[in-house]
Length: 306
Image 1: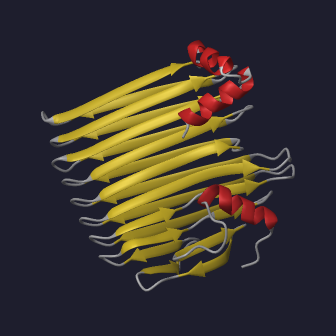
Image 2: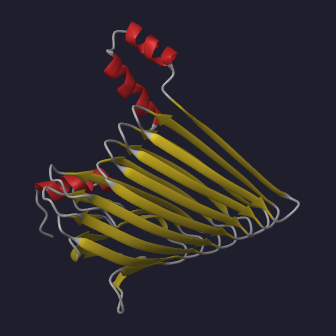
Image 3: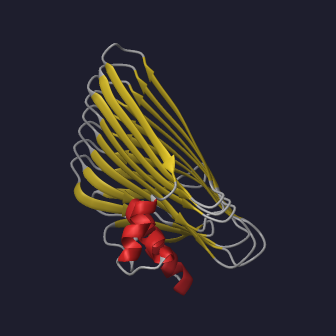
């Protein structure tokens, strides 16, 4: 693996990697493979018909991880199709994410379609982080499309984070839950300057006693724009809860568009949304403790997006 100082910094930002990961991994740089390792329980294979990989996790695999980060530079338009088979009764961590370093005038863009099959009784935590840097004028664009099918008794935890430097993003996520399946989603998003972010989440609770919880927290600063379409549909006896909290600063704009639909008399679905500026009493409290107003704002935002 030939990784320079910038590559290593990006890997640390998007995948919390400080070196070669322990366990299975596939690192992609500018549209090409930069390193790969399979294990006895986790196999990573190149797709034969299109760019991307198949990740096959054996049933009963416990306590193992897969890292699949992507690194991009300027003037690259990268597209991948990744498929994940998470075997029955397994318990694994999958860490994805994309980081872009753009120091030029041409755009850098990564589009990824990730499809997951979480089998009966399996548990999967999926972490996806987006990050951009570089002093160039070219856009940093990320468009992930995530499709997750969860079989009976499966548990999926999604952590989706975009904290810095992405100019444009459109995130599409769809999850279908079977009987007794459970979903927990945590989304954190910060936009600045003229950045544009759209997040579309569709959750279908099709199995009896399935449940879902979505917590979305975002901060829109400067002239940035955010749009959230959050759709939850209950087709059986189920429980679902959506909570959206946004802080708006400067000329930022945030739209939260919920759709909660029940197609069964025992479907219990709730949506909550709050938007507004940082509470003045919070700023006053911190400034009386010796912080400047800017330091107080940064402390509040850090805690809000944690």
